[in-house]
Length: 313
Length: 296
Image (tube, rainbow over all chains, first blue to last red):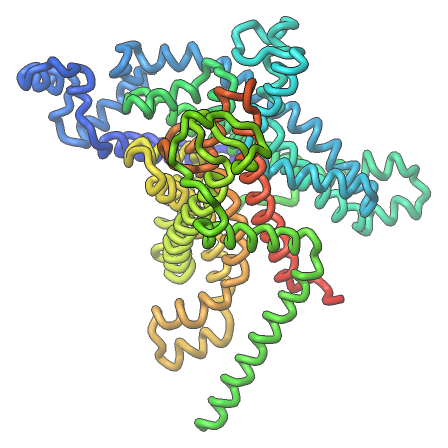
């Protein structure tokens, strides 16, 4: 187990280098001259040349990449072409909102997903199963930016129960929770649907296993059969789906932040792409990709821990 | 000898035909999949016959008729803030969604099949290719697409390219898995001993046998591609005004949600139905192709 974690950790380091290389080279290849973006329309050619020298943009690619990595190791992600603000600082201000949104969505997705999947499996082929399966299929088909708009229309505009936008209040306050509900449902619905599908199929598979039949034959109470013998084993693949979905949710925050005008990393990135503010794009992409890879690593480790049948060679 | 070869090929053809009929029968027994097929067929028809089933130019503005409600005279789905007919925009939007989806999935399949084949067939290349695939997997899909758009610029073509690149790693893994199991089969060994070239073995003998998971993947990926195209256009990174793209229509309609909610609701329903259709057909195909299932 420890050997596996160490090995995966080394793989992670290589992967992180790969990610930085890919992100850096993408921005390097992107058309547009950073110097003219910084200098503005009034800059002369000699001004631009001075900016290029200052930023080291005339250096060879590998020198620039090496400098980028060295700076990165010190937490320096460069500065925004648009606002001249350090990228790390801009991201640090907005990251709590993104994380808050992703975690709240995940909690909602897990609760709804497991509940719907369980009902579906336990009441197999009943109207509850059909309803739950339809919800799951609808959930993965619904565009979350559209769902967000509809929820705003119903709960904010018509009923006026919840705020239309923003995520400025602390999450532990009543107002903060109110602000989180709609974005979290919007972002969590797709994941809830995927979790529900996985719980259903996994439960249906485990319920037919020999050891479940043996438990029933021994006279174990139905409640124990479901909660101890079935659910515990059925949850193993579900944990993978939950982990992978958390990574996807981090990506999904980009769209939800735009719908609810949340000041998060995703929105920062969209604005940066539109303005071709490459250091900002680089920093945001790097952060989300790194978190995604880390979450996947944790899922792998948890998976091996809870299912000892898995052996990593 | 020639007769034997001819007989074998006829038998093979018949077997293929039988498999196709069995899969089709299984698929048609799945009510949801049938519903999905009908929706897809309708959408294709809408896309092809768009000029014949619409009566207004989807991009032509008429400010005298702006924000007409649904079931208005001559505009049964109403008009948007520029007075453009919503029905026409939805119909032409179907065309855009399908074309971008098909282009993205086809490009993704080409890249994925080539990488997967090479990785599965040549052990020496496998390590390198799989590391590239792992690297691409380390980005959430939409993020990878946005990174690519950041380089290429915002347009529908670039969205298709971005989605295709995002599809490559999944497709490559699926194909590689199939190639790894198929290349150990006796008939492949036989082909090798007969001196068949690697290219011939890969594309004539291995690829057709790996088709089933590829088709399921392609169907499901159409759903993802259509949804992602809409998402990226909603973010302003795909279709640009006045292109009648569903995601962009929602984005534009959002500002008028209080006065004309249909501008947001209708394109959303169109996206949801289409994505739903491809998802259920993909699910149905997967179940129909699964050899462990009993044929009732």
